[in-house]
Structures are given as structure tokens and as C-alpha cells.
Length: 324
Image 1 (cartoon, rainbow, N blue to C red):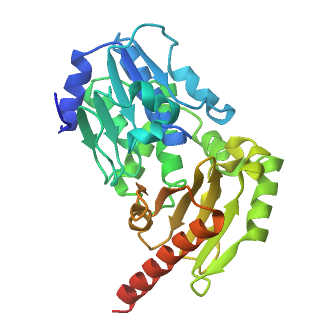
Image 2 (cartoon, rainbow, N blue to C red):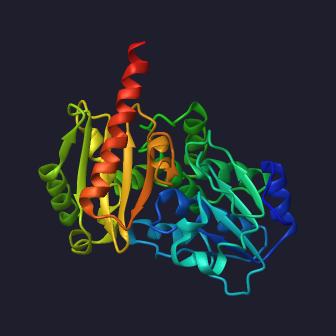
Image 3 (cartoon, one colour):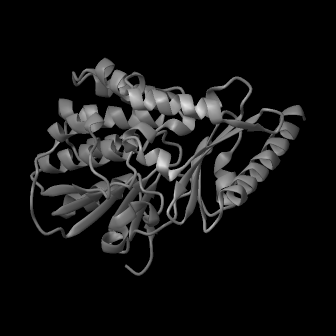
């Protein structure tokens, strides 16, 4: 195959049935959805008698350690490469050089998906890629185990903000409900994912609140996290911090600027504004209400001015539509 081909979920299931020795790729800076997908699919393929293993540029954190129960560690030479919840091969991090141009099948739910695999299945109506993988597993005729179900539920719960985000649909709730029938402790997963915080995380949240800057008549909020600050805490404590600014009453767009070796990364969250379009202006992407972009080779002031200006313009456009 010389170019990417869009396929149906049934065709994706057929492809998995016909192949073996799977390497499943998660994106770097992993979240519950990419890990939920990779572990759930890996476990299902192993139940079919196939060999499968997972590769991610970053390790499985303690928070997600229970997902290990869904899979058996297997060593073999991969022949088939599948990516899950990866919108762009650049998001593979250090795995990109090895596998970025060798992906046979990409399964994703990002509207901003940049084709890189030989075969692509993207459903941008799915609130989480784990929803897609759950449907795929059922098409394969595999009955999920308790541990596989826990992985997929985690992916759905985390990518919907515990079912609070606007992307959550009736189908999302129905799939989560069916997964809960397999007997894992959903309450414990939700506590670990959404309520449990380290002291370092609480201190980081306090810093964010104290150093937050507002713009566009307080409808936008931006905060800066330097590399030194992020290096002082565990990477897991930084995850999810982008959602904090938009929790403030009246804030429509929240922006967190994170320092990188080559510039800055902007993570945007919104309540009613399309931040995917904003990030798209800078070559980024994601979802309508949650997106990100890189601002390479820029000093802080320049990066901040650019994203704030773009967000302000998007707010003006949205407000005009709201009042019409």
C-alpha cells in the first residue's frame, strides 16, 4: 500500500484476525485513554491466541499499574504495528523514529488526525478511543475479562472528564455501563483518576491559581509552567493541570503554557469555544474542547502573546455567534 486507506471498523477487525505478532503503540505523555486502548486491545488479541505487546515512549505510571493485569508480557519480533489514540505520528515521541512510518493500522478518534498509517479508522464522534476499541473487541468475538473491561472503562472515563465533557454521548454512558457489568471496581478507578492527589499536585494547583493571568475581560485565563517547575514534581502531577483554569466561573478558554527544550507547548481547554481551531493555527490539533499545539523557537512573551491573541479573537467570534 502506497498511501493511507480509510477502512471500516469491520475491515479493521478482519485485518486483526488475519495478522499476528502485534506491536501496539500508545502516544507519548500518555493518558488513560491511550493506555486503556493499548492494554485492552493487547489483552483481547492475546485471548485470541495471538502474540501482542505494547510500546510507549513513556512508562506506565503507578496510577495505571492495575492495567498490567489485562495482559501477559510476551517477547517476539513484531510483524504488525497498530497505533491507538495517536492523532499524529509526531505524538509517538521517541518511538516515532523507529515506528512512525511503519504503522499498519491506526485507530483514533481525533478530528485533527493527520494520516500516517497504511490503514486508518477514525471516528471523531467517539468521546474516547477506548469506545472504538471496545466495539472492535466485540466484532472480534472476544468476551472482555474484568481487567480488559477496567482498562477500557478507564479510557472512557478519563477522556470524558468522568463523563462531564460535552463529547460525552448516550452511547458513551451505555458502553461504560456495559463494561461495568464485568465486575471491576469502577468507584476505585474514579477515585484514583479524579480525586486522589499527591501533596506535590496540590502545591502545583496552588501555584497555578496564584500565578494565573486573565484576558479578554476575564473570559480567558493563561498560566505558565517553566521546565524547572515541572521537573520539581512527578510528571503524573502535571497531567490534567490544563483543565484547572476553565473551572473558574466565567472563564471560557483556559491555556497552560509548558516550557520545552525547543520552545513552548500550549494546552487549551474550553467550555463552549472550539480550541481545536485555535491550536490548528499553530499546527496543532486535538478535540473541539481540548487541544494543544507547539510553539517552537519562541521566547515566553512571544508565545504567550500569540496564543492569547488567537484565543481572544476566537472568543470574539464565538460571542458574536452567541448573540445572533
